[in-house]
Amino acid sequence: MSRIVKKQRPVHLNLQTIRFPATAIASILHRISGVIMFFAIGILLWLLNASLTSAESFAELQQCLSSFFAKFIVWGIITALIYHMLGGIRHLIMDAGYWEEMASGLLSAKLTFALTIILSAAVGVWLW
Image (tube, rainbow, N blue to C red; front, side, top):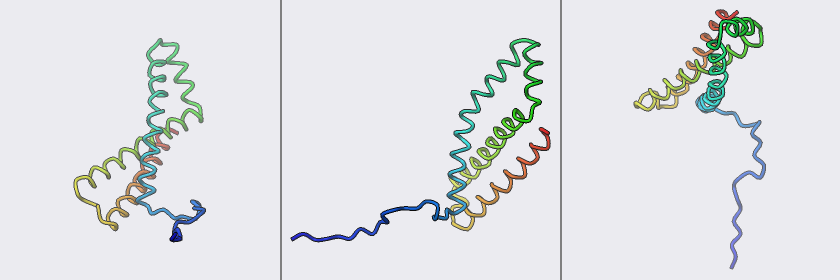
């Protein structure tokens, strides 16, 4: 006696049609910003080493960092740092037992996005 069981799982899961809630997007972006910062450490250490090698290398580095591309890279690193810091604070507050409900978690995720955009724009103004 074999019993046929129909699987309820979709055969083809189209990820482009799934709408993630803001809390899921906040969590994914927190992980991405952490990876960006991991690789940014190498860039920042290289910049620090180049700036401390000699006065000539410092002047060359200063000239290099005045280009649009270099400023864009620095802006991206600082934006990732800002988001990761705000997301980390959000997670620490949630670990303390606050903002765990759906409505407050959604609000805190949107607040993290808004603060990141504001602070990122301020950093962009400061750099350029």
